[in-house]
Image (cartoon, rainbow, N blue to C red; front, side, top):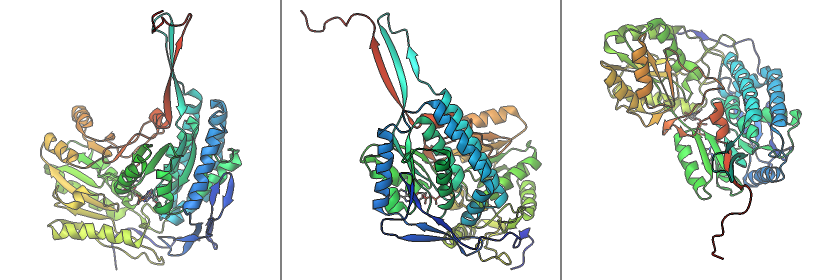
Length: 508
Ligand code: NAD
């Protein structure tokens, strides 16, 4: 099919001749599955097998949980000093920097994301490990010295214990880096299950942890599917906490599974994130941020700015500007350093994206750009065109559900109240953005939007220092910042009597 889009056909970079072999990391050793089962990952952009991974079963999950429990209970990590933990986390950060190219290549081959973006994510991940090292060293509890002359109260911060870490395929290395270094800074031990689509870079992280000198059993990795590995990791009584990033549906299933043993559950789930554009906005910047927001990671992003709410007076002009920019976004072979939009994770997911667009069309929406798959010359993968859908009603599925593809829905508004109503009329509450040169508009929006993150005159900037998480069905708990560490800590109250023992309760 001919196209006026900026298509990047096959790059000069070659995929490795041999697939990456991924095994479980249990108690400091690399192991195949107890039943020797494996599964393959086919690159979504090139159509060839890039990884052969051990396929974990119940026995493998069980061994990993046992190792993490023993490592925690023996104090192999939980009783080390903050200084020693920080030293190890900093070493891991340096090793991530050293291996950035290797990690980025596997991330791109398994996920289909652009190689330049993958490199930036790995760099960002190393920065998070360094930030977590600073927390390992500065974390402390509280003292209460005003309980009366004969009492001193202490609040100790202690690691929560064994943590199950379950991650999705869209940012495999970055997301595990938003969890694991904080868990380790706190003194926890962990069992990690990466997505079955993207096991390789978590395995590389395991290699780096061992190289850095992490004691055996402190971090364990089990590869495989939600059932049976994920379910074992969420039901087992030896696990104290589950931290999960993924779909809201699986998040709800995990809350149910963990309820049997009342584990703490922390969740980073989906979003339907709006950007609201007022007529006084810098429209050039706003249009660029809208293109970035919706096409970044091919829209397969919890933070995707998948709906915009534009003031009626500027809607036509703004949509025309956004479409013109969309045509210029380089998309195609993710191995080409100029590519900004790569492949879609699986053929099934591509069909799902397309069905949202076709259903919206059938319900009366217009599709002035894209709206179908596109073959990239020379590549045997699945790609979806940058797509803009206008005349979208707030009740349509495309306006309410996560499409998770490069598809922008356009809604309009007349007053700030109307815009806020549209923003908050959602089951999700992950992030929201506002574009206006008026500081009062931005402040009012920031206060009234029901979202864990609000961006004013920007989109999707993140910092290791700032917490990230969702309102409503977008999740519970926070990652990053000092809040990210708190998730993995218990508070223990120690009440101490000073001097003679207390007045007798039993009369003499
Ligand atoms: P998913 O929910 O299908 O899978 C996520 C992980 O859970 C995978 O490792 C999977 O194997 C595992 N899993 C599946 N069923 C399980 C079960 N019953 N018990 C335990 N584990 C199970 O999600 P996905 O398709 O990999 O990722 C896309 C989703 O992730 C989107 O909804 C996206 O919004 C969300 N996400 C959220 C954030 C955030 O920070 N809020 C970030 C990235 C992605």
